[in-house]
Amino acid sequence: MTRSNRREFLRATACIAAATSALQRPILARAAAGDSLPSWNDVTSTKAITNFVDRVTRAGGPDFVPAPERIAVFDNDGTLWSEQPIYVQFAFALDRVKALAADHPEWRTRQPFKGVLEGDMKAMAAAGERGMLELVAATHLGNTTDEFATAVGGWLASARHPKTNRPYTAMVYQPMLDLLGYLRANGFKTFIVSGGGVEFMRVWSERVYGIPPEQVIGSRAKMKYELRGGVPVLLRLAEVDHVDDKAGKPVGIQQVIGRRPIAAFGNSDGDFEMLEWVTSGPGPRLGVIVHHTDAEREWAYDRGSPIGRLERGLDEAATRRWILVDMKQDWRVIYPEEAGQ
Image (cartoon, rainbow, N blue to C red; front, top):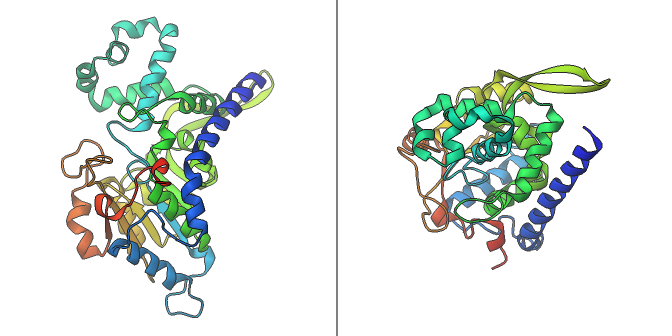
């Protein structure tokens, strides 16, 4: 990483850190006062989570789990932060097309890039999944890991959500931040297991969630080590190494962690196999689905949604004894800045 790139990256991450700290400060003070999950209502789902934690941390109890085995995995989009109306990483890709357009005059006449540059949502939609992958490849790959991290950090420092005008790092769910802190305070190690790009999330996961980059599992591109001007770099290639979605999630967990977690949290059918694999192990297990039911404070969606579709998980949660968290009924607040109210 060059000195100028490093300065730019540090400036961007400092902005993210300052904004996140300010948003979380009021609720963290309440948590320190003794309320383990201060932004959760006192309902069935909350009690089920705290009862599980009590059982697995009670030394000498029949369900006690040693600290090294207390691993909890969390999906990211729709579980830890909002994923509507489009995934945050795809919003980054769209803005990145505009930022790079001057170097690619051919994009003005070539779909789906033409649609992005002209704001033509119909043209982008017509390009389908193939077009989306082409956009991601053009905006994410062919650079070094340091160059990509600088681009992500700079974008997050200034980008705003199209509906709320909040920074994307302010679209995280305060109840899930509470939960992450509560689990870690009880000896759990927390991991992100997401279909999103691992290098995209590692830039900000520690500052926003307290989850360090080595505890982030996601989809990844192949890389190549090379020297540029005598400086070693890792080049991100235009080849897929692992897709960390659906059945790919348990695979990614095993490849990175090497232990089966005892708790899993998701929100869509893309998390089904992760929940299934985690909760089918021996001993005490916890599976939790965040159900988006709050159209006023966030979004309400499940069956048939093009983003975050939840059908099979909704149908089978009861028989599998997975906890359904009703966002509207179970959460006192949604976003961090509401926590001090």
